[in-house]
Structures are given as C-alpha cells and as structure tokens.
Image (cartoon, rainbow, N blue to C red; front, side, top):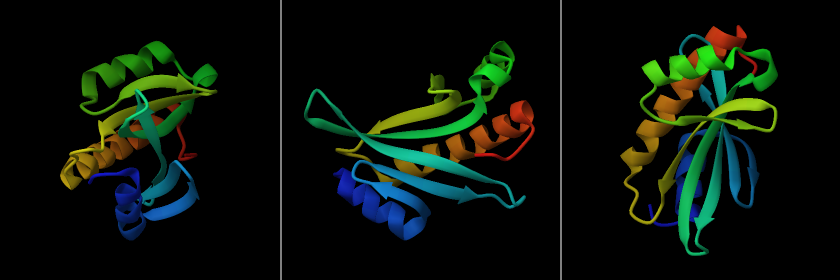
Length: 130
C-alpha cells in the first residue's frame, strides 16, 4: 500500500462496501454465525503530510453499558485496538500508517478488530446492532 486510494481500491475489491465518502469507507464484515459488523475506515493525515488509515467499529452505547466491565474485558482480551467514546458510542479503533503498509498489516488488524468488537457487542449489548 502506498496511498489512501490504493487502500480504497483493495478494500472495494475484497470487502462489501456499504458506503463511501471522500476520506471514509464503511464496510460490512460477515461472520459464520450469521452476525455481521460495520467497520469504518477513514483517512487521517498527520502533520499535514503522512497518510494513515483509522479502523473503527462501535460495540455499545456509552450510556447503556458498564464501562468499567467493558474496559476490563478489553484489557484482558484485546490485542488490536483501543477503546474510545466517539459521539454516543463506545468504539474499538486502530490506526496504521499507509506509506509502507503491507497488506497483511491491514487485513490482520481489521479482522481482529472486527471479531473482537462483534464479541464485545454481543457480550455487553446483547445484540447485533452494528
């Protein structure tokens, strides 16, 4: 990978794109148990020059979940991503520089984040909303 446009071309060829904007893609990851997860990929530019991709997915509404229990679970079980509150949602997110990104350095964190956030959603929200 070298640029955001290269990543977008790869993602469009390999994943189900639900929505696309100039610097953001929403994809849907399907799991074998008929669950799915929406993932937002966004282009971030650091210091006005370095392109990164941010991978984000929600797992719960912040005001409807035990944040301490959720963060404890993330601390014990999560390898990729960090928790944040964005808007009303608790999300897991992970960021990667695009300049010298190998495709496995994108796919592996994407799949790990998607699976983790889907498990957290089921465990803490009890559904499959996202």
